[in-house]
Length: 424
Image 1 (cartoon, rainbow, N blue to C red):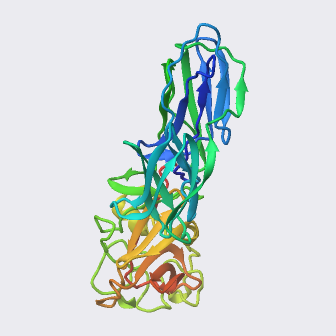
Image 2 (image 1 turned 30 degrees about the vertical axis):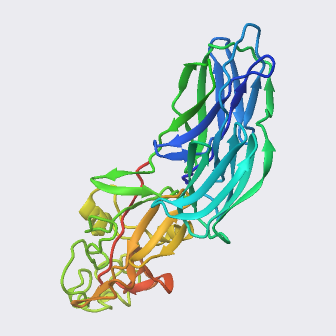
Image 3 (image 1 turned 180 degrees about the horizontal axis):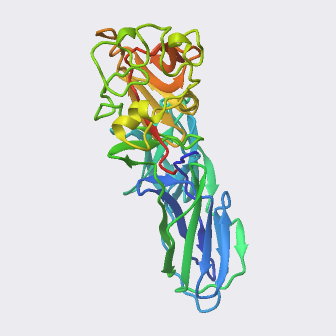
């Protein structure tokens, strides 16, 4: 599933004699905070009983005015959301200007730091700009046109060649791509429904019904869980193909940077000594396993049970956080790495999904015997999958110089980052 930030689908409903008309610009907004790309907008005239659909990338619908119409002219000015968003290092935005005006544009991060700037005088019409950014993060593009200010949020998931705002050309005034012969008069009751693909699911917006008497910017709201809580613990939807959602904190931690507790594989409580003598499912050595053994060479008295994935009773996430939470499988850990953009920080690894959502995995180190090793330098996280041989289990390990999934002895004390599937 993919979770998207967005672009604006502009539906300009222009009706008029002598070039007068009404312009209705539609943008999608997800969960009240994020822009959402609109696949289409279905427009229904409830007064005249007709329906018109505009599908992306068509952006304009022209409706011929019937007699007796008197429209109000309003200023057609502002920033249009970049396409695509999130973008991979470089994207294009458009700025509509209602009359010749001085323009200042700045690319900023969420702290207000300026990364790029453009200054110029622009004629009336729509102008294109190519924006590049070197660092994967959320940016704000702000445009000051005369005494008015406009801004959009943009999410970069790549590494552009430079931080730059480059003027790309004049595209003129907005023109229609689709002409309708449907009857319309000012004051007709109109119904608007947007449709978008969010995390791979087709989602309809909240229905808007209004008398259309003048031009306006209309936001179509979509509600889809990008994050939430389960049993009091927060999860984030990273837009992964499987729909698996990841916890925001390690098991035993209360904030993303917290190390949390350390657990041997298949054990549900933390302890002070981590070695075979104190491991729950063996009799003191790597050849005396009493559970999770698919090779009699390693089983106590030849024991095998052919279990290769932790049962719920031995899953520390389920045991500590309740039903619905569990440890990730090796395949789910691999999916996370293959579908997220990675940034190493001083304290850990930041993973950003293609929908712009993030999780943070701290360098929590690991425990061996009675000591904590590599805390602040490396991270080690269990999966629920047995290794290629019974003494081992698959784990995700990383540092600024390396990142890999490999097998490690089951008795090691490692971090756990839980997963859930709230849609199930």
